[in-house]
Length: 167
Image: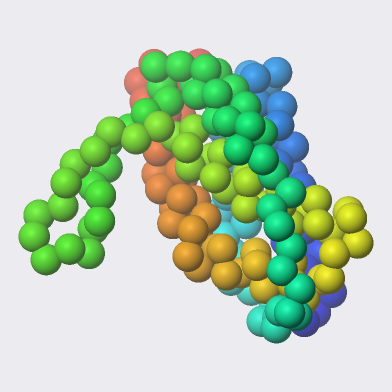
């Protein structure tokens, strides 16, 4: 794995986590604008990172449910009425998918948890190959789909008639 690929992803992950950790302190318009740049960059960087093989060390999550809940609540409260959107659930089913209303905060907090966990393990001296493998695996099975949905929802928030007048 090229060190530059990893460092680039790590830096983007840290930027994303810092934004989510300060969400309630920042202007939602500017934060939404910044997330619309960071999230696609994270997705691209995740796909460009070289494969890594994990060791046999199972490391527990460093992010608690309480910490996730704090981030979810902060994002949800800050986005307020702009914080949910309509989408189709299970888009690859053979019948018509169910339409659901979902909170953007859930996606942003889930992405934060997956990325923050790896950053915490790095700071604690965790095995680089394990962290890279986990970030890539979770991108494929979890946060990548959340990131794609979050981009769509954040774009709608940022370009809605009311919001666009204030950006």
